[in-house]
Image (cartoon, rainbow, N blue to C red):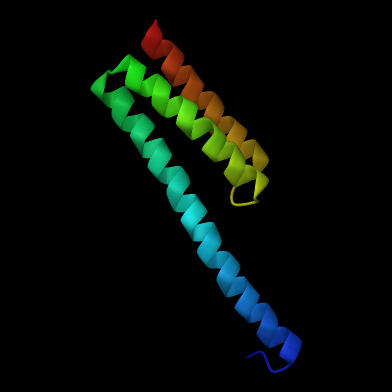
Length: 88
């Protein structure tokens, strides 16, 4: 258990960051789910709109350290690929 003042403060900071990161991760998942629903329904325009919304959200999460930069890039690439095959 933390027993120095600095360790206690670190615990408080970690709890606060965890809450922020959880919210960011949840927000990203929501945008990805919206894209999935649009693709599943076969609505091309909705899928494009959802992709345009999801892409910056994923990159924002990557820049904030919620997900790794390469992971975000890989996911965005796969989403774009699915969108492209849907358009064809």
